[in-house]
Length: 367
Image 1 (cartoon, helix red, strand yellow):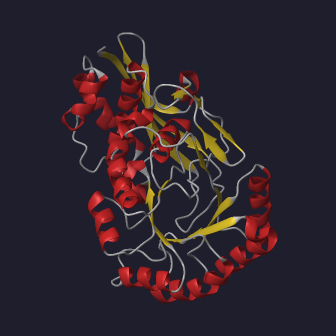
Image 2 (image 1 turned 135 degrees about the vertical axis):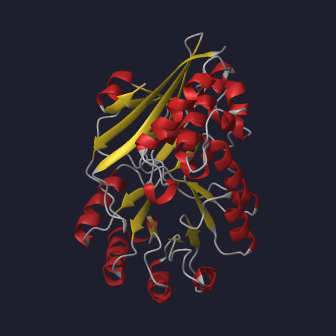
């Protein structure tokens, strides 16, 4: 079943970022969407968002790389493409571009084999995962209002941003705890915005609030960041890491040095779902949760992340797969989000597909 056509959409949409973090809030969101079509008419869909602070790519960069690969891809079966993915283009420094193509190829391959996307990860261990909701750098009253809407929909875990103003960040979290009590789990993500001294003082204030974990308290560029992570853990707070985790070598080092409790997995950081799975397995094997995070993508990439989350052994934490922005959907899926859970549909592939007319509407270029 050779691939006959590869379509690449370089898209951009204006958004009102509802979960502002220390990097700011997005006003224009770029994504690249890929569709592979074989000679039977079967389609594989892929997608990735180029986060500049992570992958150093733009949507235009991604689209150019993928379009150059198109002549080599035509005529290959999906499984052949997966086996030779790094031969069809130079993906060095282009992890998001590679991710979009690999998701599409795995989607097409598993559809051809009548298997779920999680088949490439050894199959799913469960049929649903719990989800969190993001609370950005908002004044306390606005944070509570946003949280109330999420809790009313069944969400029981809130991810609260911090890392800009220690006093304001603490007040936001304290007020949320006062409003919702012990039945709602709270976690915070500083995106590396604190100094080591601030991170430790913030930890001392938050231990009494009973946070689920403290994500990326300081950046890995801090000379003694590992010591800071260890000290935070010693003071009774679990540590999750994102900006410290860019490769399987990073994962192994963090686990070997017992520097954290949780690893955040953004598939595009690792160049595709299979690489991301290998990173997640490092944490899984050590008995540490690996949390899937897909904050800016549509149903397409979120469904790939969902499949990976379903395949993990350690699954006692909410994943970050429901952060959907307020925009017209350009993709659809068969799965469901209800009551704070993401539940699997019995379908082959990752269970999502683009709506071509809507993708075209937001595309800057299409090839």
